[in-house]
Length: 92
Image (cartoon, rainbow, N blue to C red; front, side, top):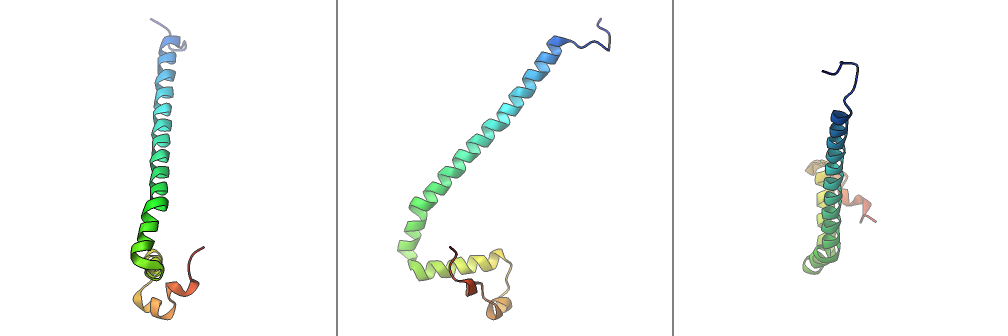
């Protein structure tokens, strides 16, 4: 029976290997998430946004952007009447 102050190199190696696999698993998951996000952005920019512009027109699309900005900033209808989200114009 090994003494408590001696380390078992086999068990240490197995534990280290499991830790490396766990870390690699997280890295692989993050890499996959990054790829999915990039695909989503590319599809939105290349297909969704141009189609929305074609269907809704620039004016309606801009108004929707202002409406979404008001929701995002928790702007009430009263606040919008006094200080509308559209005050800043289109985002650059």
